[in-house]
Length: 598
Image (cartoon, rainbow, N blue to C red; front, side, top):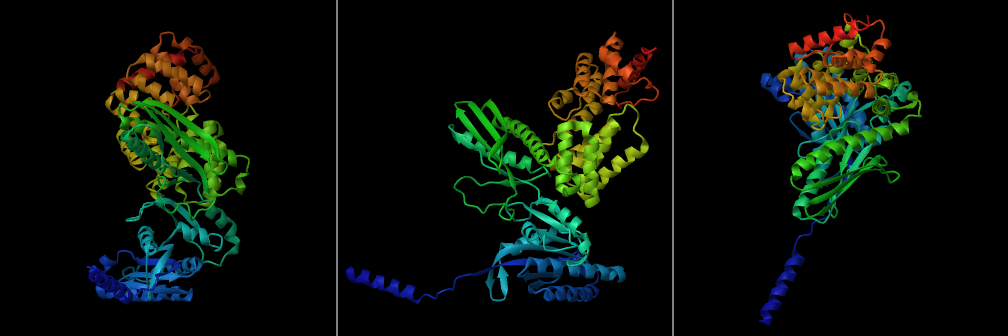
């Protein structure tokens, strides 16, 4: 037996000693450029020889730029090119250079000979094997290339961070967090704007720097919900609540969201390429005692550790899914508004002319949240500056449209055709530039609602909600439009919980439903909460006059009439109802209101 054991030991020893040894993997950090031709397969199907001839001509342009800027092509397949650069500055410069050369070529050649390339750039750690490279960094570059605009260049956050202060004449526009195929974590990407090649036009540097800095949005870090007590159901509830809060906050375009891993799970931090930009932190806890739950959600200033917002929920665990949806909705709204307020507190004292685009948008949003319509001109000034720096900024366009709407909403007179046209044009342009701009879609839905296009309003609101399911403004508009289309007052009961319901719209809806007590109740609130807004006060005055026999004697109605001595029923703005009888009753109340002046 001992001899046998010695023999086995000797065999194993000799086996391991004689095994071939493999050198350790060689790695390096590089910038990866991935490019391919738009619609290549279709063109090959139409005319192989012509497409191949044009591909060779275009490849001569791309390859020359890559080699002249110290790049190395290590993979080609059909129309695709993948190259490595030691410097991301060289990679960006090469991409911009050959895209401009290809655009110039397309301008003079026959339409059938034109080829457009998409380009994606990423920085990553790769494995070196001979002349080839492997690794996730290459896959990400290819995925970024797939979402680039035809003829455009799209870069990852890491590339942007490295080159943004080193290249003049090149501007970047953030596309926010993008979910890339087979890539676990969403990542922020940037389009390179059409402009002059790197190293030229120094006079444009200041505006370019401002536009570039603009895309450094604050990061909100969300940590897993901690649990104290409770069983596995509470643990599942905590995980679902955490995912729900992350998903809801990621719908906002005002900031980026980082989902932190559970304790003990090792993952690379998502903000590694964005030092110093984590400005807010969301934490939460659940205390369970039997069926009773006490839930805390807090928002901290990550730079100071100060708690700036918190919400407590005392609930029971009877239906955790309904409870989860309710908490996510309330938390999302509270956190988003507090972040806007915090950004505004930081920016309010700074001169508009010194601010970059995202700060201008944050400042305008701060005026919206804090002051409402009373500071609409200040908000509009910020947005005009933002559009001067970035004329194709979708969010700036939609916020400017909101300013126009708010200014007209203050007036009891019909909106003039030019203003209405500009308002709609801004919204449609914003949506064309960014079809995922849920804010622009929600504003367009409201515009359609105000015009009486209730079916179209519902469709547009639902598009906004597909992008951002917790956006209350779109929910409110959908509820109102559904009510006016169907006459079903249960839509009002549901929608009345939503923050963005304007009181005069609610009062008019109860009026349309022939529920005078609720209509008068909300009409009286209009004078308290929307004082000085002439059109809402006009609607409230008419509702009170139509629903109450002595409505013309109401002190707020008398005050409204005295404040607008030249206004009469023939020239004022009137709402659109889904029911003809409601329109007739409104006209009766309108005549009663103004005849009482005589």
